[in-house]
Length: 514
Image (cartoon, rainbow, N blue to C red; front, side, top):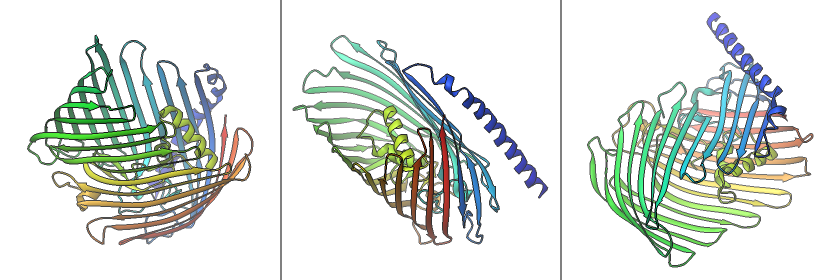
């Protein structure tokens, strides 16, 4: 008991020190905001009170209580001819009341993107970083859409992801383009080895300068994946490709080459590879893409269709791909921010402008950018994933409707895994989900948002099953240009073969933009 009190005191002191540092940064926010027309800096301070009849991740405990969460944050963006960057960092400082299962006192959230391209050099530096909470297992307790990432932390982990991609290209007169690029990616899961891995990928290519209907190129690539707890996977390939554009709307491409890999088995296997692709772009608002590849480790494909109208947009995709270690989700997204960021890809292709658009919409809807939108899992090894996704959004002058339907079938790839992760317990993980959101704006200052979710996670046996249903009703009120208040009612149920869960909660939040 004494040790637990000392730990709680230490965590509280750490949270207090962090809060003081952020308040000091807020005190200089107005000075930072004057960095110039190409830059913008903003600080925020918020708080959330959550009163719930069940915050526990254990079936035998009905953990009624409350959580007070302080949510300070900072955001910075810069856009010039050579630099584009956006950074959003936030903290969640959690103070539980009458809660048996203690959550982490300090939790981090980060979304950062940066691109540097000095004019006239051919050099491009691209990178990004992310910190967020994810479900460790698809078969463990799942926090529903809009659910708290603070209570019931047995199946929740903080995941850190970092990627950096330098590249350089030049032109050999009027004959060809030459480029070389490298991508480094790192994933780390707090308090777990599951999902911890590094990826290194280098690509060298030589291609024709596009001046006519016919194009050609040579490409060599080497990719290495090293899980912290597992064997190193290596793939090497050399490919010749050609492309043909009969007119401005159509492009057809084909490739053939040689590839060797040890992803499927410990010894390397090698063989020929080939592929065929098609792109049809009848207008700036519509695009159809199809790609098929037969590679040394198996066949992959991707089919996608996107269409954008003045007040609506939707996308449909079907794919079979090799997923890297890390977080896997039913629609490749786990938080509200990631889901909306993916949905608006056809509306705003530029990632930095899209980041601002996503945050504006989430603020108007009263949704936490780091709140859980879809559940998934974390894996330490590559997985062969077949996925079908349908997303759409429709806007009227006063309302916004969006939906996302997905089915993701991830299968164990290569040698059997050891440990307790999902693809070690089951040869496949099937995630099926449906999300529907409707928002109505009463005025320029107030809106009502309803979000519904149904999800089923399945493994090889009935013991590996999880069903989640939830609904969240949120009212948002802008008090003035800088202040916003929201209140939510949430009901959720999770029915698993070994554990069931139900919750009713009232959540109230306030945010001030400096």
